[in-house]
Length: 549
Image 1 (tube, rainbow, N blue to C red):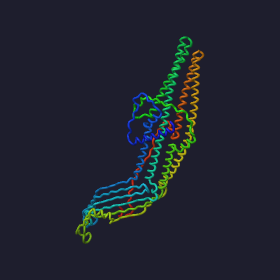
Image 2: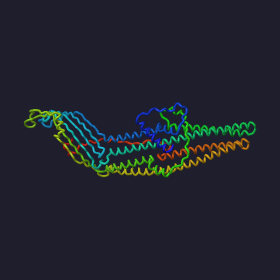
Image 3: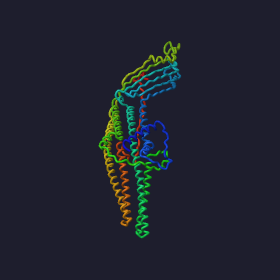
Image 4: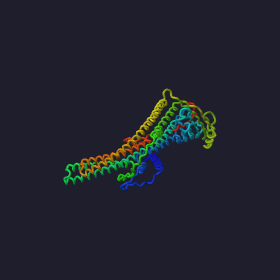
């Protein structure tokens, strides 16, 4: 599979991920009821992209990070709040003319409002409406009952700290960047999974070829046993020669058993990468890799490959996002160490009504009549601003000494430098690994040519030794030794061919993603979004003033 096919596999994985998120796909028929599966490399990669559980974990990570973006955006959602209640209070009289009994006050009250943090400028606004109905046994009340209502508007705007970037904006920017990183991580996981599948595919094919080589070597040894048995019977060879070749047959039968076990292990490794976890019958399917290795192709310009990889490889892209996240933290804490200066403004329109008690004479006076003001009139007063209350001012706060924000800024600057150094270190690793992979490709190709020549010569030597043996010019020992040499040469050729295919797979994958070390998995990262409640601005009033609301 070339780099172009690898990119196509990644695109197919992304498309499959989108289809998975959109809705359940139609069930795919797996060959669980067949005895053998003729498996191409492309089919193995497709199955891995669709079914590999570790790749599915990373695919779901992209959805988790998308949800984190939604969580961060929720900081800017309007917040509706409402309160309805009733209260009662009985207080002792404060003077003798109020009588000796307690004064009972009962309230019905409600408050409804909406507040929101703005996504630009970090300001907050609040609109609320409240109403109350109060009854009291106090003899000096002017209204019985008393009906109040008010509509209030308030706005708070930071001028220095939090204006350019507050906690909500910091979380949102980092969540968006982490979502981009998760998409890149998914592409990286696809490359690593595809590389693992290709390695497992060619390993299985080499293991099956080794079984064939061991089987042929065993047959050659058994044929030599039959020939020696006839010669011993007619006295042409000593019995020791027959014992020697029979021991060789036993050794080669053991080699064949081991080769079959290795092939089954290789088949299970490939099966684990590509099977659907829900189809346990797939363990019983025999897989036959049918693709043959592609012909030799010249290596591309290694320097050009490195120049592209150090800027575009997925792990470098993710590391650059970490640098950007660290830079965002530096920008945030730089802003946070500024004085907290805010413009606070508010306006409230109030309405007053109920049943007014008309009095005459000296305080507290004698009730001579009643005048009622309906709730509609109270609302009219509120909107006509008969009783306005407004405020406008600045609030300033600044910590004295070494604040948390200053210390956090120092830490975030160090973390930004660390992140930048990690990018530089990764780029050096990329260049080194690709140069090493290119040398492995060249070395493996030369080893394969040498092993092929050695296998050809070993076969010619065995053929010559057998002809000499047939005419009595050679011995059983020399024929057996020639068979061993041919077996070793063919096994070495298989190993060299597998190493060459593995080096090609590794060279292609390293241009896009780092390799997985032994025991590693394509794991997920962790990230959190902290809930940030929206403040409710109320305006600014003189301390002790009754004008606040």
